[in-house]
Length: 290
Image 1 (cartoon, rainbow, N blue to C red):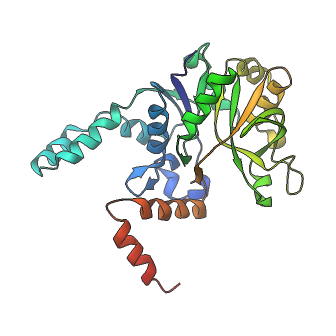
Image 2 (cartoon, rainbow, N blue to C red):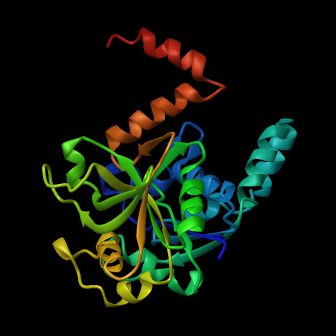
């Protein structure tokens, strides 16, 4: 089946960014002039996704407002200022895709939002992208995952090579065999194995293509470390019965915006690539007394 749906979990509290995230979702933090989640949505749409399912929490109304049609007062203001390019830019946001919002219910953990979206994705494979990180790649991360699904017709994981020992405390790692260049057949997916204990240097971050096979496992899943329900642990159980593959994303760079330092690094790098400000921003950085 062709993948036309994407689930974007966006219900977290963003506690690492308090007090900024007390009233504003962390997914709406700006990367120069666009929120993080818009980068994610645009990537999914470019890869052929038509339905964007955003799993939200009680303080996430700003996400819905952002992807809604622009306010008439805003349009009037832009028209009076003869800012036609801005009018086009804000109008196209709501026209990117069909947006569906699901309120997250259930226990803490990154498996819960996927479980909450079951009734919307129905019996179809679907893309999963997180709302607070993204990958810049050619072809895009989403396209590489979908291409792998089209070939293998199985669950596909987004992999990034890393030799940073601290990443073993942050991500799941693949145990398996490379069946072709950049494609791994997964035997096990070990969540946060700890420094020196990772079975490979292929970390699973930032996205998946999941099939409906995941839902029976999620619906019977037991809590893991700290009482959380981890999606990688459910995928590890799936890999014992169904084929699961990991794709090492090619020609790409992973941008994490989930903590302050990583977010600031992302903003600086993206600003240096922004055609309207990169020259002046580069001059500014060079003048800093570092």
